[in-house]
Length: 161
Image 1 (cartoon, rainbow, N blue to C red):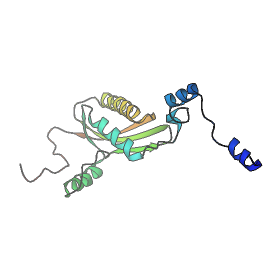
Image 2 (cartoon, helix red, strand yellow):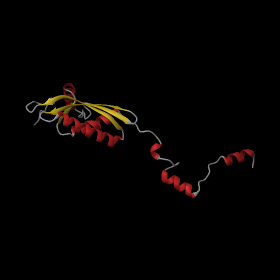
Image 3 (tube, helix red, strand yellow):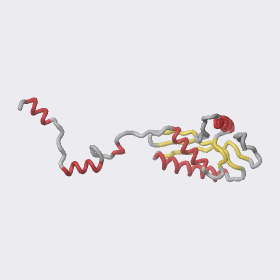
Image 4 (cartoon, one colour):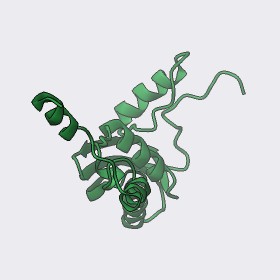
């Protein structure tokens, strides 16, 4: 065999022994943790939606967002093809492993604002960390309004009853 033929033969892939082959197939192709083969990025909007839904689930939260945002949102929701914005009133900053959230809420009259804020914070942290794997470093909550019992909703009702 020529010198070149010997080099090509020695540069071919080596076969694994049966034990090595079984070990590699148990851990995935090439061995190692499959979770370490690439990156997962999570958009700010994804975290905002998760946090918005989690905050709305808390008893005592009437709405999300400030008055102007709720008014524009209500108009946008009524436009054909428009969808209800679950991220209204939520702002997220997402890093590689951590996230920080700012929420603006409207609470029902008569509830303890401190208790509602604590419940919102706990529910949002649990939902975001469970669904994204990100560490929530802070959840800032701004209470922008109180919904009084005799007060009409800012969001207009449909024409049909």
